[in-house]
Image (cartoon, rainbow, N blue to C red; front, side, top):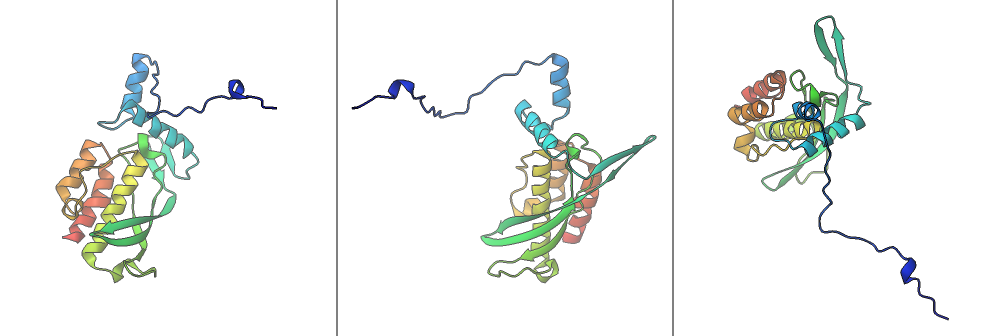
Length: 198
């Protein structure tokens, strides 16, 4: 005996694009939301940044306010980045300040990035950074800084793509200025290290 179950089955729906919805906000809430974003960010990108911040709210980095003074006690993170320079693949282990609570305090923080180990191309052994070419070491440092900024602040930094870009004072200044990022970080994480690169 054959029984048809067709009328009881729910169809599997597949769409070519994700459905776009709208959220109604009062004008004051919209302005508050926009004040939390960076230049050029959409409302969706700002909201995703807020959601990511809430997910990372267990960060051990603390903002300390005492009287009219504000300071930051950083926790440290470590992460491995895969970097390809002119078809040569490197793996780098980096330690840096956890910027979890910083997306809405754009003006007062430092990355303080350190490359702990590097695995050069054609070599599966971890080595100290000073065992590789100085210019390559500097380039790896700046690539890692860009990655930390993009991940921490939900950014896309299109200005930096070539070796010349990554070692350019003007390009980095533009990135920090246009995204309203910490000039304290620019001076300590970028400017100081660019001086050593030239």
